[in-house]
Length: 150
Image (cartoon, rainbow, N blue to C red; front, side):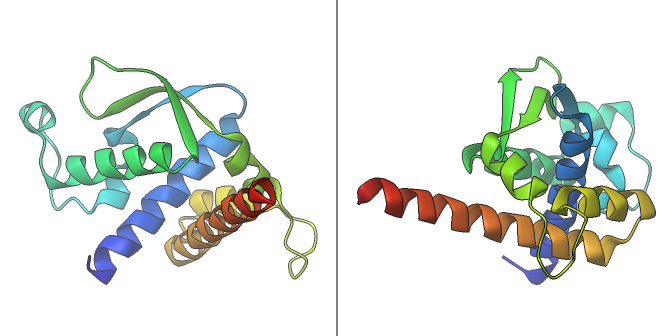
């Protein structure tokens, strides 16, 4: 996987976390068109392209599927619409990580910092924070597994 894919993944993940954190506990739909800027389009998307799909759509679909399978997002309904995940919320693991307040920062949670970066269009900061959330979530999972096995 290229570094570009990782950067796109981190940006998209940050935007998804921001939307879900701001709406929590209300479940929302996630549709590819909400994240068009993060998927690097070089031209507007037509209705025909939406039905046919393509790389940006597959990238979105695979990213959301990975977040679901990795335990960060839950989607409660299968959608009949292409590239849409219905009734999505953060999992307890994701919420715990996003509510965490890093000691080095002081008063603002990771979720609050992600939401601010998304609103400001601070792409580099958004990518960095998304990576931090994913690594903290991984650490939580490992810690829980170690505790459970003992």
